Length: 404
Image 1 (cartoon, helix red, strand yellow):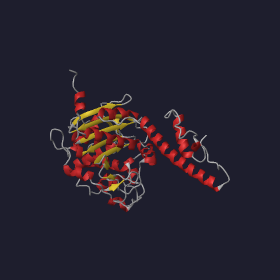
Image 2 (cartoon, rainbow, N blue to C red; image 1 turned 90 degrees about the vertical axis):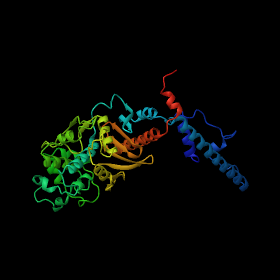
Image 3 (spheres, rainbow, N blue to C red; image 1 turned 30 degrees about the horizontal axis):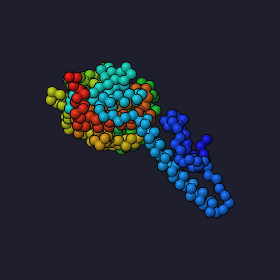
Image 4 (cartoon, one colour; image 1 turned 120 degrees about the horizontal axis):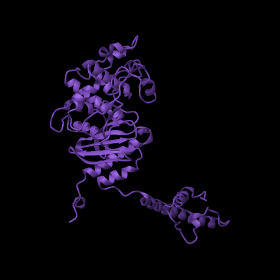
C-alpha cells in the first residue's frame, strides 16, 4: 500500500515495479524507516524535533532516489534514438494509422516505406491535401489569363447559383478569399460536412451559408470554399477541373490523378475526394520545391504564385499555423516547412531550405487532429529532417558497401 505521507513518489515506484520496469525496491537504509508513515517517537519536544529532522532527511533521500530510479526506468524502456533514415522509418511503424512515407532530397527519392500492406505506388485518397492542388490550378489559370487575379470577385461567374435575396457581402468575396479560407461564410466542413454533401446543389449550398465574418476576416476552414474554386475553374473554361489538372499538371513526371469525385452537377470536388499515389503527391510537392519548375526545367506554376501561396494571410485557430493560398506553414526542427494537410494525416511537406519534400499518408478513417496523430507526423518529419540533413558518417557509408 502506498503511504499517505509519500503517496506520489512511492506510488510512482510501485507502478513501475508492478509493470516490471523495476524488479526490486532499492532500500534507503537498513531500517527502510523513511518508507513508513511518520509517527511521533516520544512526548518530548527534543525527540519530536529530532524525528522531524530525520524524517525530512528521509524525504529528501526518497525524492532523490525516486527521481533517479524513474529516470533510469524511462531510459530502459525508451527506444534508442534513431540515427539513420531507415531506423527512423522502422520506428515509425509504431504509429498505428501510418500507411506510407516517401522522402525526396534534391529531387531524388532517398527513402520510402509502406506499412501494414500499403504501398507508395498505390492510389489513396489525399483528402484535403488536394486543396494545395486546386490552389495550383487557380494560379495557372491566372497565369493563362483565365482569371484576372486573386482580387477577382466570384459572384458574376456564379450568379445562377446565388440564393434568392442574397446577402450583399456575397458580392465582395474574391478568389483570394476562397483560397485563404477568409470568405466569411459558415463552414461546410467538420460537423456540417454531411449535410452539405447531402444537398442537391453543393455550390448553391455553400453560397447560401450564413456569414460568420466579413469577407477578408478570420480564417473559417471550409471545403465549400475550395469547391467554389473548382466551380469557378469549370465555369470560366468550359472544361472539367479534372481535365484542366491533367492538361496543366499531367506532364509533370510521376504526377497523375487516379480518381476524383464530383458533385450532383458534375463539378469535381474542390479540396477533397481526390485520389493519387503518394509518389504522385510527391511529384506535385517537388514542383513547388523547385519554385514551379518540372524536373526538365519546364515552367508549370509561376514562381510569383508559389510565393503568394506561401505568404501567411491568416492562421488556424486550432493549431496556430499560418495559412496562405491552400498551404499551411510552421517551423519544424528549426526549419520553415510548407505543407498541405488532409483528414486522417495525408501530408505533403516541402522544406525548401533542405531541398526536401516528404509525403506521408495515413488511415482516412480517424481524425489526425483530435487523436494527436497530426502532431506525431510533425515529430516524425522533424526526425526525418534531422537525420537526412546530417552529414554522412563513415560507418554509414561502409554499411552500404558489399562485403570484401
